[in-house]
Amino acid sequence: MKTKFTYIIIATTIIAGALAYYGYQYMFPEQRNILEEEVAFTLPPESLNEAFQAETQGLDYIDQVVQTTGKVTEFDSGWIVLDNHIQANLLPSNIDAPLNKDMEITIKGRCVGYDELLEHKKVDQATMILY
Image (cartoon, rainbow, N blue to C red):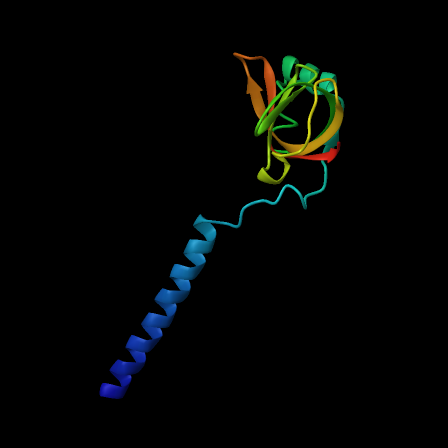
């Protein structure tokens, strides 16, 4: 009788552990690595700007990896603005990159939406491809 009870306890513990593990994996999936993802859209800043002003409000681009080339109009540590249209938050590996105004660069990042106050399209996890 004791051995049967011991087997039930062991089996219940194993099943509970497996459920806890798979539940954790489901609730907290591995984060996306934008650097390794394929580019979904390659377009100039003006096209992205027009897409967000259209009726669809850029829904095709939200949470997609975009690549764009433009001139740096503003910059600070951690973010840049391209052609007064796109604000990109840079990855920590690109923060110390040498930047100048009117410098032509290409960025790759995840499009997260539109800032109505500043009228900028937001891109995060951005990395500079050509600079």
